[in-house]
Image (cartoon, rainbow, N blue to C red; front, side, top):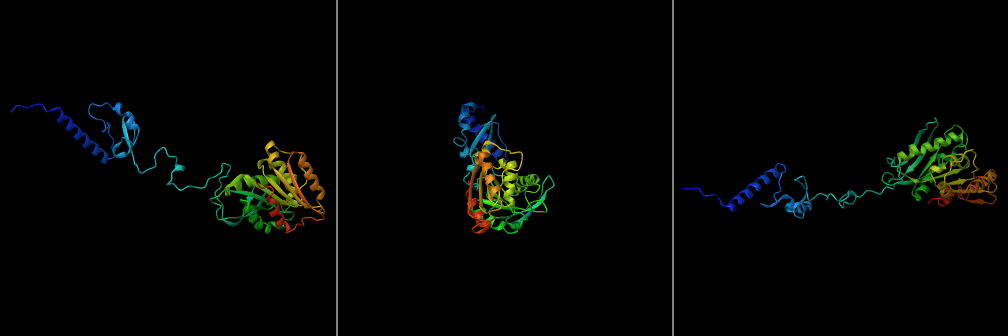
Length: 326
């Protein structure tokens, strides 16, 4: 019998069947082809370039496809589309929003704890905190409280300080003066170096603190140190405010480090009695800082002696800290 040439339709059918077998085989093996099975016989690849880029509209079984140099990659339709930002994925757990000013600390221990810190200048001392249970997942502000001469209130004021601070979204910390006399203003310049370094290198790395909400309070010798030494040297690093209880003289330093933002934002609040033996220094301190353009507020209790407040020192702190917090 003579052989007749196969008809063109039969050839097309055989080629289509062979292409389907190759595609299924490579798909099962995780391979890829150098051709597109969607291109019909006689059609050029560039004729389908637009539809291939649409991914999912014209692709096999609705799968998204992307083509690069003729190669086809297949994406699992159950995964998040590539153009969906991770933080907008509705199936991803949403984490708490962290402000850009957060220190990024590790979260620190929960509950009451005491820590020891050694500064670069050799000064050594301790600080206390009572951290709430959500401290690892929430960004807090900070209130640093400095005790009076002798450090007696260090042993108990950390508790009310923590409670008061948390009402305003702050962590309350009390710091012991780094010298044997427990007087902040003695060797005050080096003590100021110590305190600034402790905040920046210890507290802010242990806890996630909002750097724009770090406040200060001091009683008696602690207040003397704040306005006499610490604020003139390091206050502009914080731009927040301080409560000064029965103390707070003018700047004792030759230097006053300042900036327009510091002068416009830092709030100073004096609270004392007119019979306080430090009253004249307090009045001089208020005048000095006000003359430099700073925000100065005060309340003087007529006839009250040194550190005699209604409700005690903790009551005074609770009433006045709210006046400087933003």
